[in-house]
Length: 157
Image 1 (cartoon, rainbow, N blue to C red):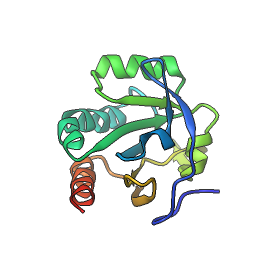
Image 2 (tube, one colour):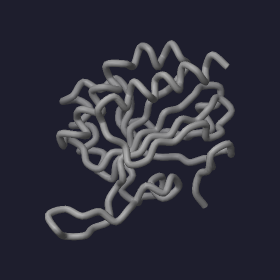
Image 3 (tube, rainbow, N blue to C red):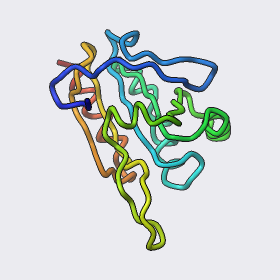
Image 4 (cartoon, rainbow, N blue to C red):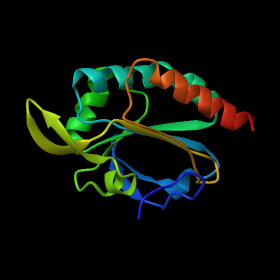
């Protein structure tokens, strides 16, 4: 089972930074941005996370929670969050349960070798828990601003 536009996102619970557990259903009443990135502390992922960090106040004003997700362990996520001063939680999805729910594990090529990895993707869930927007195969530059525009428009009704 995976997510589809206009439909409720199945509930999930995942381990996150700051010694927290994220349960999607507990965020009802708020919009949620879930962005998936390939690996903590790599250049593109650091830039993308920094863009979300730098726009967090505007996301807060749009009643929107930001969550980052990768397959890194919780320790790597904690280090990444601390080093980059991220002001939102990162989910450790080592078992790929959340990744599979959002269908972001894809066959990728690196240095001529194929491997399964996370396709950079972002999802916007409305305050009722339905998938409102999705961005797949994301390019980092300008992406966070686009997501913020969508979150603000959705929040404005």
